[in-house]
Image (cartoon, rainbow, N blue to C red; front, side):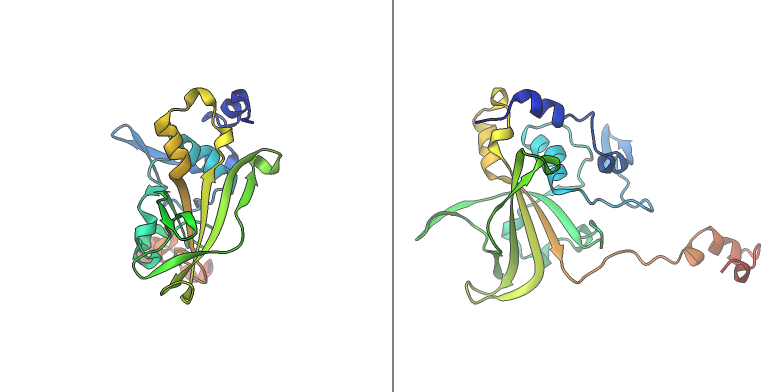
Length: 231
């Protein structure tokens, strides 16, 4: 049975972000919209799985304001090979090698019945294990379901495994308050997902030499300080 709407409204309130979201709200106001200052030193977008749903996918489905605009882009993920996605999007996570996207899934019919299309121009996403439940703050309430997939080049089932891994997250329909449901919301709940794509073995962490590029480097160029004294 559905969870109570009071739990949903209290737990998913914009006014009660976790520490991760509080840090993430380093933003500027431009044309009335918040934009993430993701280039700030020390900032990294690395949300937990339940935070992805609680603060992003759930509110996206309901048409509510997101904590940060445009940090999760909307793109037709399943129409592209992962190496065709903008390389600049792979800048999140611990190793700055993760990209996050809102995407619609497409249902097609096959000999196995109704399935989700995950075939691209040059390959396919192959499911790795069973769909898993994700609990809210490791508690008792299932807020989402997660599928893990690996991208293979070629034709199933004989494709060649690549280093691209996807975590696909979808909302548990039971957490959505019944009073907000309509045909449009139901369709989004069924088809809307967040795709977290990781390129394994790659790190895009910026290798910045702050002695060269920072204030100390500037002072050195101006001959105002001997860098060897503080190196």
